[in-house]
Length: 355
Figure 1 (tube, one colour):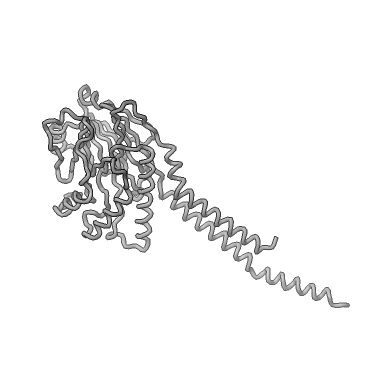
Figure 2: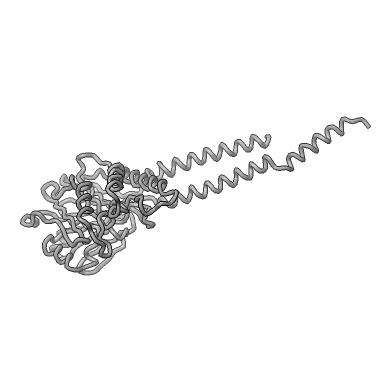
């Protein structure tokens, strides 16, 4: 076979393999990853399925001015959108709770930039109208980390953009409380009827591990059955006051009897949800998923593929393909082939000359 045909065959093969690699990395990997998630089936009619999304932190436009920042924002948004859509298909939730740090630069964004972030967020987390939502602000949304000043403007525009559809009660038995550790505040508009509900606290920053006056107020006034938080980008379970901390990184389903924890063990439960963004640099990335039936809570994490691994595969494949094609190109155009051709032609002429 002529070498130019071999060269073309190699080029076409690498193009086909590149197409297959892109198809796997951009589409199939999310569907295959979904097959590893644990299903939680409902046993009763009053079953409530809840997704917990912590620290998506949509990349901003202010701090990162590098040449590839636009591509980084696009890839991060696409990853958040695809993983979220897979979680929606798998769980079909009744409620979605966003546990703060929705944006990475929300607290420093200009009004125009903030509106662009909101549009991106709504595109990424598109939901059906019958799915109820709860949004908790984080320090990257309104400020407040390490004593940072929190402006009324930041609070107002976050509430205007994200909390209009938020719920306080769901059906007849669930009540949600937003707890803002940065402002040492929480929602409690119907204190007299709290004892009739299963009470769920939602906080961006963890509460039980930190202690302090806010925790004492939350325990005395809200008396929550369970608290969900984020901020640390880790997956952990806290039980107070025993100071017991459980690192939760497997794919199992945890079961909690919330009534027994509170009434018999006199304990408070907090579940920390890991970050849902690969841009946070964590190995373990996931979305929390809980199912409530009466006072029984079953919880797991829908672990997500680490996008950095597949980006490194792209980089390796690009270098490998370029090297192979370059070698083939050099062989196709190398000088020794031309010399060989000339020698062959000279030999033919020499053979044709009579002695």
